[in-house]
Each structure stands twice: as C-alpha cells, then as structure tokens.
Image 1 (tube, rainbow, N blue to C red):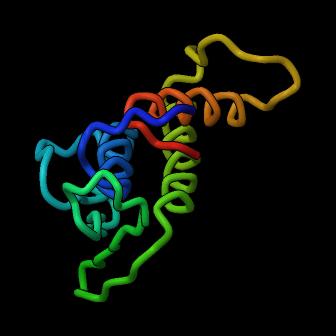
Image 2 (image 1 turned 180 degrees about the horizontal axis):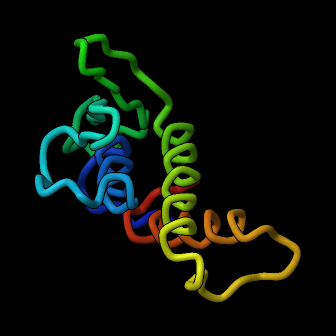
Image 3 (image 1 turned 90 degrees about the vertical axis):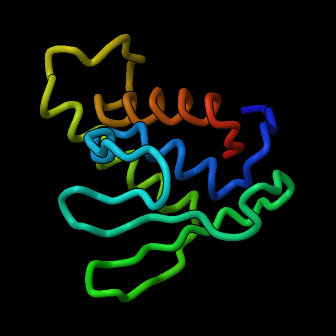
Amino acid sequence: MGKNMSGPNLSVRFVNALRQLPQYRCNVCNDGPLTHPLTGAQVSPTGDLSNEDDESGILEITFSGGHSIQVNGLAFFTIALKEGVELELHSAPEDPGILEPRLSLAQRRIKDLGDHLCRKHSLEL
C-alpha cells in the first residue's frame, strides 16, 4: 500500500480510519477523541498531529475511570478491524461481498476492509 501523505501524522490517520469501522460509525461527532459507544473508552492520536513525518503511530486510550494507556496504532487498528468485521458479518451475513477462495469469511473481510481503509487514509502496513 503506497504512501499518499496528506498532512496529518500516522496516529491521526489511524483514528480517521477507525471512525469508519462499524463499532465507531454510530458516533455523531467526527472530531476530537473517538469514543467506543459500548465501552466508553476514548481513542486519541498522539504526537505532532499536523506533521506528516511523525510516523510513530501511537494512540492513547482513555478509559471512563480516567486511566490512560498508550498503544501501538497498528496493533489496535488490527484488533478493531476484527471487531468491526465480526459486527458486520453478524448484522448482515447475507452480504459478504466478493470473496477469495481458501480464506475464512472473516479473514477475507478483514483483508478487504483493511486494504480499503489503508488506501483511503494513506496507512502503510
């Protein structure tokens, strides 16, 4: 997946991609921290947000009790992809899209959704 730097740093691009996953799409606020509607955990980008050369990709997760942790953006994005695909497949199992042979339905959908979001948000994985 090629780089198409558009301004924001890697952690901002991860948050923008996360906003489009099913577990976050129900949020009406499209700026600021991203809140998981079922857990209340907030996801925020870190670093120099407008520096496209900041490729650290670290995200900060803040829990409803105030405790915060920093996580690897790619690892968190991968986990969120799995969660999002499972939500999609269980809410619309009759619409899996075009599938490649030899991969499970979840594996194919994770790959397709991940490829799409990475291209759209200039994420190089």
